[in-house]
Image (cartoon, rainbow over all chains, first blue to last red; front, side):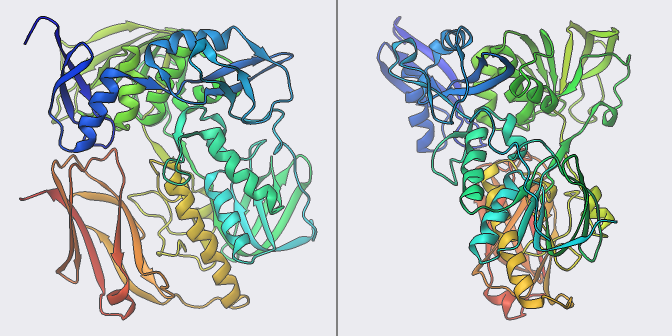
Length: 133
Length: 428
């Protein structure tokens, strides 16, 4: 192993086997992947080592209400930005009404990804229907 | 007493199972339908599941629980299927009479042609574990904490220990961190997590939360509010604490993620027989319970890993209820049972437990959980002693419910009396 090489251990998340992957990385290159039992393991190792990303879900304050609104990043964002993304969401608030899918924060942290509402508020199902006899 | 309202299909519960059953029944032609929901809103537990990973199978994309619920609620709304929220069913009889109460309509009585049980499940509480210690505030089930945080906007504590590594516990570990709490450990009695690997990686490893396998909480300390828990390593064979491994963790919150139990009080009141393994009703492949005209689906039947599988099962229940009404509107026939299914070595929680006429599908869908980890594993299906199917799996684990399909043809012809399903290590 050269000095620039780095050994990383991962758990593949594609199936319950949860293979322990040993990945050797040299800068922008994956040198080797070991421990996988199928192709998905190799793909996961490349994705997770070179460009780990997650959909971030959280809650945002609603002005004039103690009830929060649930939101998510529309696409996955780089994993190292999760904390900053949560902070950005926590620093803002929305006013009602909000419809599911509405953009709440545009282009969060310059990732090119929007934060969108994952529910509508007020909730349209908060009502009851009387059934005719 | 209030007047009795007649309804063709009455669905108890407006979560994912009830919603999908209603949509399926409507689309099959039923126009006299009603969903009764206890909570203020439709959607069941999905309302508080703000994380993503739902719908990959059913909609081909990763939705949050709230988005997944919205897809189904929209379908219910488009069809103008009636539902009542804040309506609690307090009695169900074997002749399908329903008594319900709600603040809006008071006491209501219904006579249903068919009933679909879709009440879901609830969490095992502290009392089910018998952990010694004081009775103090700060001990919650993971789902209760999830509701407080995600729906009410309240944070139940700042220093958190999680007991059990079920998916809700793992999800709540991440959630508590993102609302500013510290999660000190996730403590699991078994040598493996019962949650999905995806959640172990993305909820614990991403946030450097230690997962302590073969560990448990042996005592709880606190006056008024929880102040600490004592954890210890357990012997993997006996699961008893090992003396000398005790460790005190100072915390103000203990979240329990230690299993789910189908909620079957109403099923019992109607005389529906329950399985000792799933703790849900015994059903045929059409989701009919042991009481004719009463069907069950979703987590009230058996605890599912994925909501997509709940929706799929609920569609079957919805269609079966419609067919049942069309065929037997007035009389209640004897069920024509073709074949019994049994859980053999290595598995538990088999659903369905019997196959009956009419058997219209080409395949019968069977769910079960392996009893332990088999890696690599093999599933064997034996019909009257002869091997019908052998299926290889890279791994079988209790954390993942297995689904298999067996062909209907021989069973329909009445050539099979009993089917036994087993799991074990793969011999090759």
